Figure 1: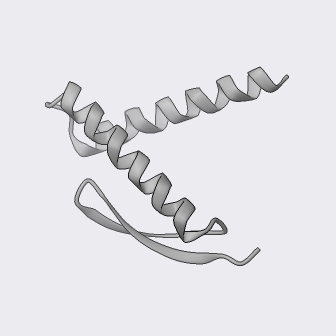
Figure 2: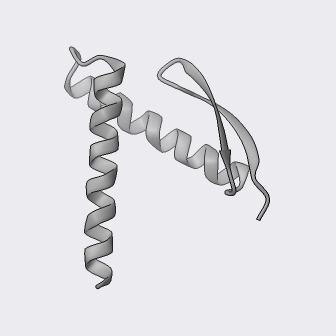
Length: 72
């Protein structure tokens, strides 16, 4: 599969991603990340963007492990 570049904004900062997924898939991931980060920051307004991103990553990895265990 061909790798392509995708630009998107997360919490006001623009990033460039390289991925094999489609532009539509990358936009969906970006939208979901922004929704979840907004929810995290709304529930914890004193968190920095970095702390919110760390919680999002931790939650995502936790969900990934649960899905892997469910497949066994």
